[in-house]
Length: 418
Ligand code: PMP
Image (cartoon, rainbow, N blue to C red):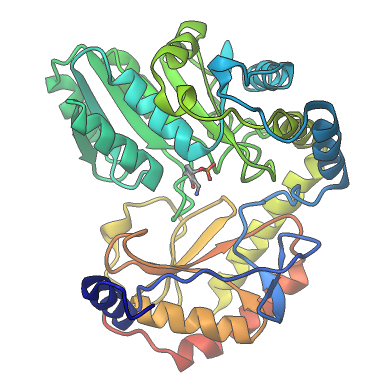
């Protein structure tokens, strides 16, 4: 920080540093797989990537991006509605809609933009009540704030607590109602109770808005996502969000739903209207990623086996509290590191103290493993955690090697006050 920095910024940063909350960028060097890392000359196995199927480095995807750039150039040149919308976008949208079983789709430049778009667009014209899970992703939290600033009534129900939601929906008199949730929660790896949520929303004439960033490509028999995992098929009151930066190994996002709903996004979604369209070359590459998700099912099977292997391994470690079934996050007061129930690639170990979590992150990095420490405000106070993201490129031997070093490192940095 330069001397000219206003002192309040310096003080603020120092305070965050003292509390173990200062975030710092790491500069990564090229690697052949998202399961590897090279940071400042240090290398090893990475558990930090959402490239769950290992597609980011897939030769077919790399080729498709190059081919797309040769066909379309690098940039879209303008926003979608002004001329940046191409055949590559249209093909991707219709393939996505067909694969997931929705009538239509709209592509966005990121999941963040898609979430801002869908919430603010649908909370725009009439008095709106929005009911969102307490643990929805930060991009949805920002979308809710924008909607609130625009006059919507926003309430956050305790994580997964449908009785609160039901009562609030019952009392709500607003003509537009939105129920908002992640499909897979990004910091805990648990899956929303979609069947019950969908039923509640339908019964009260509400839209169900789901951000399935972490379920898409992974869950369900063919990778369609968390609704397929729950045995559901898309319904007319759903607005469904998927992203391309995780299982699809690329970047961007889409919202799926009824034709009219997509047309409404074209009218009212500001992060769609006032931003340069996704590069058509990227849309072309994402189309290839979608084909790989559909065809290379072995990657999904491999990932499922690794998730199973990991949970069995963690359960055998001494002094870890393993949760074997879904339960409310506040239901344990144990001081032990805690493995919440998750059957997705997101496998956290909740420690509590940010300083301890950061110290363990650093010790693991020295041992050749990059496991990000996730601290407040990204997660609630007292729930700092290591988040292990598993991906199909990991080997079982690598998971075993990590499990081997975990216990001694935990002993070296015992649980501090939460
Ligand atoms: N939703 C969830 C649940 C996420 O985890 C993320 C990314 N961390 C996003 C949305 C944002 O997606 P994108 O990275 O495409 O902006």
